[in-house]
Image (cartoon, rainbow, N blue to C red; front, side, top):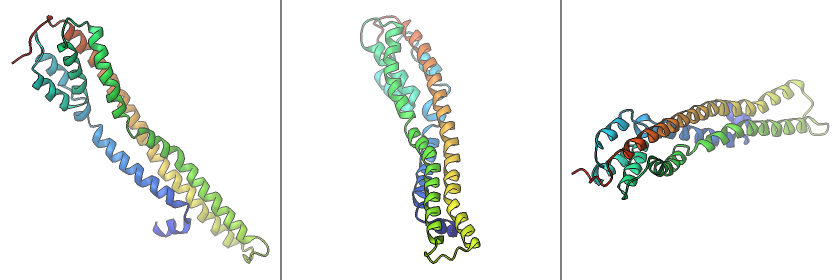
Length: 214
C-alpha cells in the first residue's frame, strides 16, 4: 500500500488528508450521537412523572438540562412554565422549539464537512490522474527522451489511475457514513419534536402559580 501511495505521487497527499479528517469526524459523530447523549428512552416519562401538579425545583431542572439534548429541551419547557403567569401549550412549545433549533445545529455539526469530503474526494482523485497522465504523455512525446515504450506507457497510466481509485476509496465510505448520520439526526429531531409537543401539553395543564417542588 505504501509503495502504491508513493507511486501515485504528490496529488495523493490531499486525499490522505481527507481520509484522516473523515475518519476523525466519523469517530466523533459516533460518540456524540449516542442515544444516551441525545434521546434517552425513559427521560420524557420521568420528566412528566416529577412534574405532576408542580414544577420541579431549579436544581432538578438544572440536572435535567445536563442529562442529554432532550433533557436540555425539556428544561427549557420547565423554565418557560416557571417564568410566571399561566402559559399555553403554544407558548411552551415555542420556548422549547427555540432551544431545539440550537440543539439541531449541534447535532448536525461536522455533517457538512463529511458531505464536502465525499463530494471532493473523487474530484481530487481525478485531478491527480489527469496530472499523472499529462506527465506521462509529456515524457513519451518525441524528443522528450521517453522512447515511446508501450509497456512503460501502460505502467505509467496504471499508476496515474491510483489517484482516481484512492479518491473513490475515500469518498464511498464517507458518503455512506454521512447518509447514516444524516438519517440518525433527522430521526432524533423528529422524536424530540414529538416529545416537545407532548411535554408542552402536559405543562400547560399544571395549575398556574404552582410552586417549585422542594
